Length: 98
Image 1 (tube, rainbow, N blue to C red):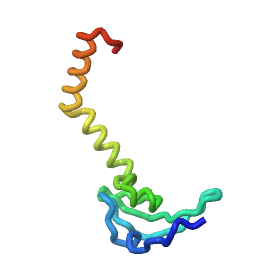
Image 2 (image 1 turned 90 degrees about the vertical axis):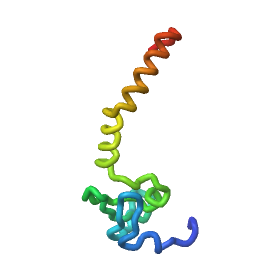
Image 3 (image 1 turned 180 degrees about the vertical axis):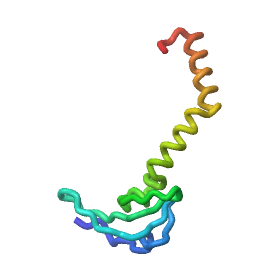
């Protein structure tokens, strides 16, 4: 079952997806599924093999290290603390379960 013509333009080395740059392509076979994988390097230096469809859809534009760093930065930020205190104050005044 074919889904259409494969677009080779967006898998050329040097193509950028978010923080990632394509290094080379690789055909990956996993069980009964065959897909196009792209070796990419993140701006932080980490290299990963990523499914091309995830990159094109914008689901894998950062590596896990960068995502975790952003998440930790957000959790420690003032913005999160302010929202949490507002939420607790609201629940205490409305007698909702915490």
